[in-house]
Amino acid sequence: MRVTSKGQVTIPRDLRDLAGIQPNTDVVFSFENGRVVITPKLGASDEAERVRMARILAALDALGGTGDPHVDADALARITRERGDDDAH
Image 1 (cartoon, rainbow, N blue to C red):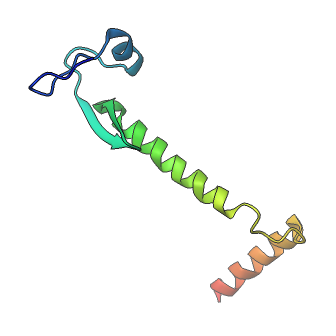
Image 2 (cartoon, rainbow, N blue to C red):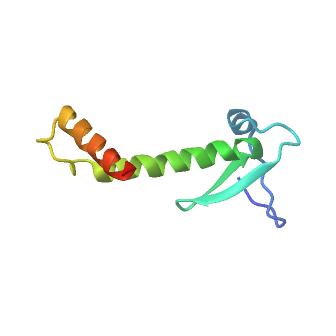
């Protein structure tokens, strides 16, 4: 695929169909991990949600193994309740 002097390219039909890009669809261009990404404008919020979820999962992965394995669920619930009681006073 070649870019014209005006910076134009033709998106192949199969890719347009997969991405849900119909004639006269507004699209959003973004640059992610060294790649240009084209998303239908209505799907842009979906992409933002995927990015947000990836950040959440990365944060959870970073927390993996940081808890105290000797604290059981009952003890954790008790600690949580006690902290809530302290905040209420």
